[in-house]
Structures are given as structure tokens and as C-alpha cells.
View 1 (tube, one colour):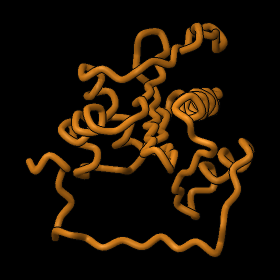
View 2 (tube, helix red, strand yellow):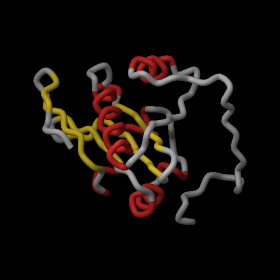
View 3 (tube, rainbow, N blue to C red):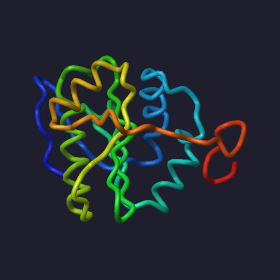
Length: 157
């Protein structure tokens, strides 16, 4: 990871997630409207950290976790997910820094491209990613099939 940078009077550090970060991460994700999902549980995060290549990045300002980005590489596809910044710290370049670090991590792992899924109605996210050079493809359709009636964490808890 790069050295900390200054954001006005604050110091921003991008580092890897620690289990003790979960309460702050959960608050950021709740503020983003993600609520309780199996994929955002502590168990799901622990599973990801143990089984998937790529870091779970957090942005820290003056010791407080204020942003997240999960990087996943399966040897073929590079993905960035769970990019979120605390409302009190938005519009300060933190998401851009997280994305830059996520892209660097994917390139280091061997990925030739980074992919992400975005809600088309999230204008702020779409504007951010497009300003970073991401292209949207209207011919791609997201499909899913629930294997269980409710989302559950991948550890089976």
C-alpha cells in the first residue's frame, strides 16, 4: 500500500481489512442502503479472506474506517465490489483512491481488466466509474438464480 496522503487537515490511509474493523464497515454499508445480507456478514467476509485472492481494502481517516472496496481475482476475472464511503466523508476523493488501489492490486495479481456491477440508477456511482474510464455495456444482462429462499452466508451459518 502507498504512504498515507493528506486530505485537507486529515490523513487518509488505505490498508487491508482487519476483523476488528467490522462494526465500522457494517455502519458504512448500512448507510449505503445495503442492510443485512449474507454476503456482508462477518462470516462471509472471513470466508472471502480465507478463500479468494485479492484484498479487502479499507480507507481510514485519522484512525476511523470511512470506506471499503473488496477486490476478487479468480484467475480469469478481476472484480471490485462493496465500494462505499461514509456519507460524512464523501466527495473527498476517497472512493477514487480506493479504486486506484483496487486496480493496482488486480494488476499485481495478473488481471488485465477490472470489472464491477453498478445499479444503473445510482447516478453518483455511475459518474465516478465513468470518470475513471469504466465502460458500461447495454448488451450485458445480469441474471441470478437464488439457490435458497433467503441469502445466507457462504459458510452455511
